[in-house]
Length: 314
Length: 314
Image (cartoon, rainbow over all chains, first blue to last red; front, side):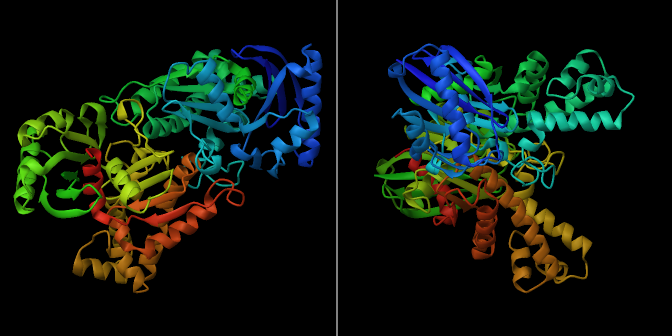
């Protein structure tokens, strides 16, 4: 049997066909109209599922289920998306609607970061660990947490919203409109804002010049830091400290064997990973006496969401 | 059978005799010399255990085990206290040493806040909840977390150090020497420092006058706020916001059915509880769409640590 995994993001939807042993056979990506009515958004997604089934050359009868990862507050058991701060889902009966639209009975929904963590834990970097925290640095910051081998979801699966922990009281405004949340400092969106601010403050820098030429994205500051630009290096150092503060908070609460970094920013590789590992090892509570926590990059990379979502209905 | 529960704190050690159904029959309290050698501290504690057995009028043969709750990083499985920031324990083989000193085989050690959470969950305010977070506002801030009915301890039980989450980057210094941790804002120690600062800033206030007469403790600001002093009301309001920020962080990660507030500060009752409940209900992620989280005062009060520690060896 094959499984469909759908990974809904703030900018696009990814959809793919996944085998029982976690291999991604085929995938497609489509833009998302985040301000549309929820049913209209889901119709677009159902069309993407159809396109993937056709494009992947599989029989609809061979599809054993559809798993969907969605940002925000998801009630897994009932397949309801209660709230998503970047997309117009409000108490959306996602599983029911998709079941009807796609004509496939087995539809499961979970938080996107939970899906990624589940995929990485089962088929990627977290393999073998009993306790893991996966932090996804994308449009927002998502977290998926495995405790003693089980996905942490909280009462009515409203938990694991680690992007919305307080790290700086009264600080930068978050997508959810509260101030000082982790997401407001550590997301790719936040990194781009920090890069833009650095360019404005230092128009003479290589960073500003580079940004003018190529535009700003999550890679800009890494590229310029590698070229030795001091402004980029300082901006990156501060961003890594922000990311690290959240990781240490998760470390002190969960003390997992491994913290997995995913999302677009994680493509920076060692330039992100090595200083983060140092930050966590140095700042974790009782550092000299406590067990080591490994910080690792997601190995399934941007496919973790699709594979993890598909894992939901296996 | 009866069980001994030992609750080690930054200022004193409490020890009592507990029945199988969580009733505390008898207890004693003794001061702790936090700077002594670890073995010397444990000899004092063993003497307290002896005194309790005699004072409680039970036969040593009727004692089925000793459970010990200790602040800091504890390795439950091996009974080792790796590190305690307020007491001179460093990789201390607490279970082994106490086993020899007391001549009782069944000795278990866990983090003090874990013990309190276990006691409250089994015999107190958390009864019936599958997911709970207990926050102990004392000399430091401890947390004990129950996920799906099980105590969260993390790899080698180094986790659940919720007093050391980052809530204000670069902020007040914590007992562990890092900056901006929850404990540095929400502990009784922090509340006393905040009260003292308010007295210095407003020497004309009723708060300052009251403090001069009675000294400052964790109750001072509550007493003066009740008398209508504006400085006390503002100081208390800010403190409650600090405590609330941490609770919301735990709420967004764990989404428990109940958050239990314990420790000396919790004796303030409704003056603490009601505004905290409002703060959590208002600020939790997706507040309008998410399930309600009840904030409750610990019902076992200061005995939760003793009862919970005893529960460890049941």
